[in-house]
Image (cartoon, rainbow, N blue to C red):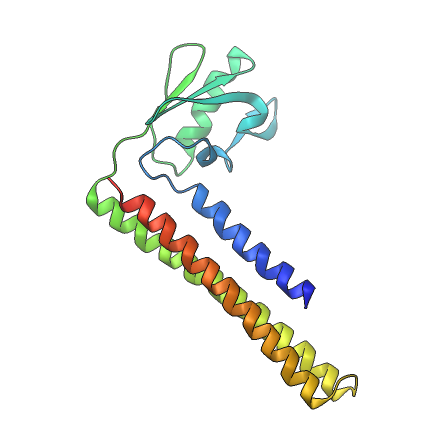
Length: 180
């Protein structure tokens, strides 16, 4: 059971990580987590080549450890799907986050719900795998019918707990997006 609960937790953690990359009109350094910069021929995470700060609510400042990396960082941001136009002052790359329009907020809210549903499907697939493992144990004579029912109830309770956590995460992120 612990193995399946751990898998469900990973599905929840993955959803949380995905939500941290969705921009809500405010500067969030985690939006750059998946971005890779060409660092002397090696794709490297943004935190590995620069210091990222939030000087204002809607501005991110990326200061590379090496000044010549400014162009590479700009290139990586332009090539990404962030939809942001970087500017630079020669030493740092500056990202300005525009305020989200109402339509864009609604679009993001739909996307959040879709990702939440995908996480629920993952949790339910894990439940199915756990139930199949319990049935196999019963058929092999390792556990009785009553123990099988008891295990299946535990699995269902665990599944319900994670589905509830996913719903709370989706609601919190949707509320954050819809707040002007």
